[in-house]
Amino acid sequence: MATHVYVPSDAEYEEVRGQRLLGFLFFLISDCVIFGDFIFSYLYLRNASPVWPPPGIERPYLYLAAVNSIVLFGSGATMHYAMEGMRHARLRQFVWFTVATIVLGSMFLGGQAYEYTHLHDTWSGSTFGASFFTLTGLHGFHVFIGVIFLITVLIQTLRGTYTQQRHFGLTAATLYWHFVDVIWVALFFLFYIY
Image (tube, rainbow, N blue to C red):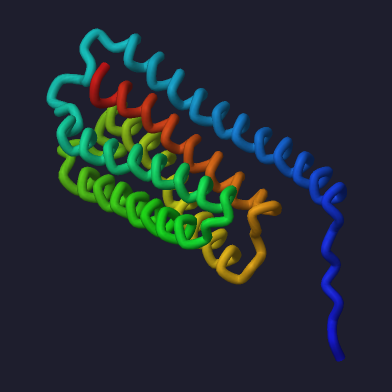
């Protein structure tokens, strides 16, 4: 017995796509609020302290964070080109640039894990350590979720779920990945430059 798969019309798809986009944008806004709360808490603690970081606490390694930042920002570029590949019906371009984004995101996580194991502070060791590990750990968790998200949409695309005309999941993944990049700009500035 053959099963019938319902395929919505273009008008129905556009309506659902608009609703999903609005919902996804609300999700990103809620994530901005969460990061904003943690960032403002960090700034409050930093400004309340006469010396920052507190005496005896070394700042995180700028060189390692700079290399890791280049890797993450490079993944933002590869994600852009992956989405452009889908928009122009170039599946091969989409696949290669999505795989590159997944690899670069994983490299970023590896760099972050390396940094965590080589810092001279701990999460419970100081206010600076608690702030650093909370914010960068939350960001790292978002990168991890982003990598899983990209692997999922890559598999779905290869199975034919997404096409040049119907690719909301890819749009959401691209927006999410760029969000992760933007948050890292703020964290990089706060912990390594400022």
